[in-house]
Image 1 (cartoon, rainbow, N blue to C red):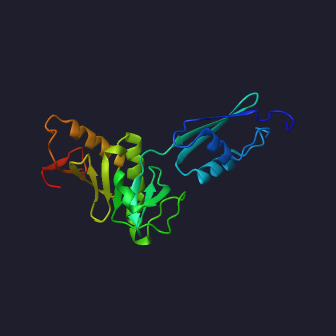
Image 2 (cartoon, one colour):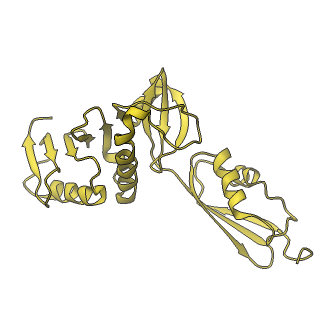
Image 3 (tube, one colour):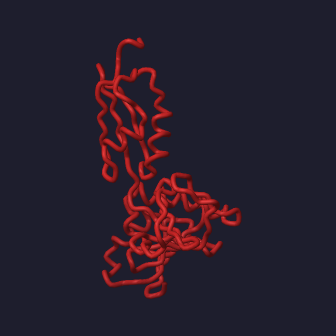
Length: 222
């Protein structure tokens, strides 16, 4: 087995931010390596450790000699400003970059919390006093990404322990409970905004904290 099934080519797909050459180099896989002796988990760890914007990786073998690496890069991250830097947080809850605070304006913001020992490439971890907010934040980020709504969010505010607030499409403040089913809440939000009663110039607060499909709207108040 060690004499056959050598890697003759590596095909990378799904990349945008990184080049195929960068991903191949980060993988540590060399031409001539045996395809069946490769540890896929080690390859995944090597790539994500070197290239933090990569969110997910699939590795497959195509006989006789091709290794297929399919990647999914994180979409628009959110910025969490702390100590003069903006830490960019992916939908998967990973710190993908550190940039100067002055460059954070192009991203949606996460406010009302503090990172614990931040480092690029590591999972988001909030300081101990924000433990209650952390799980809800991660669930909301995942739900926004799944629903394709990340680009609509101007800010996620965690400063109030009574509810989580989200600034949305430049017009609304959306109030949600901590620990909610955010996939369901976002469906309610989308249906609400599609209602013909919502005018294109309307602003206000959309309260999703009711325990049913009902939504409470306060026009003009944010």
